Length: 320
Image (cartoon, rainbow, N blue to C red):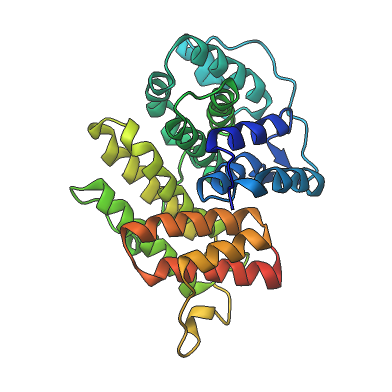
C-alpha cells in the first residue's frame, strides 16, 4: 500500500505531474486526475498515485484552456459577476484566486467566495464544486500545505467560477424522492446520500456516469462543513438537494438488469469494492467507491455498497 511516502508528498508530487494539464477533454468531459490522486492518497494507495496519474495523462487528450482576457481583481462586483460562467476566463479566475490566496488564509478566501459560487455549483455536473472539496480536504490533511496545494484550491475555485451554472429548478416528483433538511445537517447529508445511492443501485441508470454525481456532490459538501459557519449549513444542503433532484430530472431513464434486483443480491464490502475500483482504474469508480465508503462509515447502509458495486459493474461492461 502506501509504504513510507506521506500523504502530503504524494499529493504534491501528483500536482507537480499535472502542471499545465487542462481542465477538460473532449467533448464535454472533465479532468478528474487531481481529485483521483487526492482520493488515492487518502485511502492509502499512495504508491499507486504517480503511475495512475501518468497513465491518465496518456489516456486522456486534455484540452489547453482558453488564453483568457483581462485580469480579474475580484474586488469589483460588476467585474467578477460579468465573468461568472465564462469558461474563456478560466485562467483569469485561477490567477485571481492565486493572488488572493497568497495574501489571505485559504479558509478566509473560501468563505468570502462561498455564497457567490454556491448558487452556480451545477456547472459541468458539479465538478468545480467537487474539485474544490478535494483541494480543501488536501489542505486540511496537511500540516504545512505547499504552494501546489494552494494552487489546486485556486484551480478548483477558478473552474467552479468559470463553469458557474445556476442550479435548475427541480420537479416536485424528483424533490419528493429526496429528504428535506432536518436540524442536524450532518444527519441530513447521510439521509440524502443514502437515498441517492439507493436510487442509483435500484435503477442502474444508463449512461452510468452522470447520476453518480447525485451521490458524490452531496458527499463532497461534507468535506466543506467543518469550515462553514453553522448558518451556512442549511442553505448549502438545500442547494445540494436541489442539484441532486435536477440531475434525476435530467437523466430519468433507468437501465435494465440492475445488479441489486437479482435474487439474493448482497453487495461486496466497501473495502472490497474500493480495491476492485482502484484495480479497474476508472476515475468515477474510484471516486464513488471512496465517497460511499466514507458515508458508509457514518451510516452503515448496504445501499452505499450497492451503488458503488453497480457503477463498477456497469463500467466494466458498458464503459461510460
